[in-house]
Length: 186
Image (tube, rainbow, N blue to C red):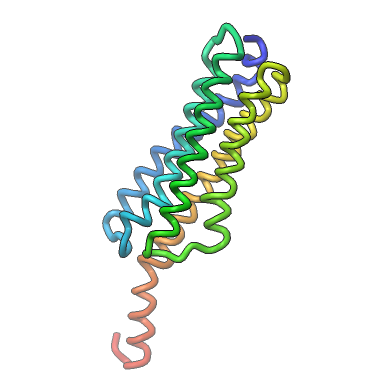
């Protein structure tokens, strides 16, 4: 479809970024695994795994947009299924966040792990319904959804690393330094 070819550069950029960030996330998880926080398995399922899912969704949508479809109906169906699956998965993430005990989620966590992903996957799903009558609107909805998921993933990956570095790794060291300062020990 001609309308898709105009988006090639956009999807090459965000798809490549998502693929590279998936690789970096694996490196980060390997480093975190050396000193995992308490209840990391449940917290990871709630706060880390969704980042890979969002990056994967961006990569999937980017690849999907490069396929030479004979009509917009075919990718629109896949957008709709992907959006619906993302909505269900985000609901599961919300439940996991509520049930884990390693970390008390703040407003920002709920925003970036539940609210914004729900909006993004809903937009992707709604784009499928607009595809037949409003092709340009549908293509912008899909692009907006993919870009939002990419930025959500970047935020969440950074947040996980910052938490691990400043709270999980340095937190005990800072406490030891405070205790040593009080007792005069080095």
